[in-house]
Image (cartoon, rainbow, N blue to C red; front, side, top):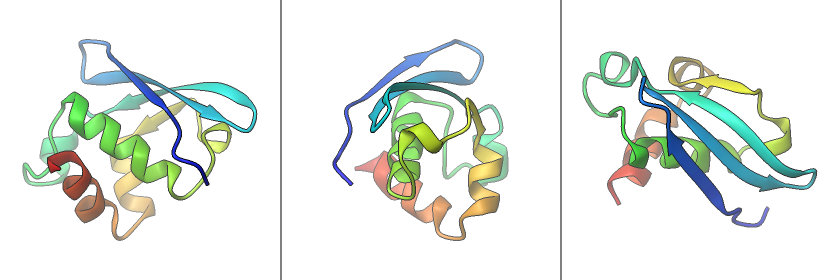
Length: 93
């Protein structure tokens, strides 16, 4: 899979509007990081770096067109055993 161009816009309530290119054109996803710090004992934060890292991580598993329109960080952490470490590493570096 190619490395898609990702756009990120903070919505101000712990949510981010993310857009990425997919095989089906540009896709927009709302990503909620409201519970990021709580669910990860502070390893992830409600910030743009974590939002970008989360979408980047998800795009290593599936095309943007296959993502739901709303993604909660809790669902990502529950679905993938390596998500916390992988997202934290991407967000920090």
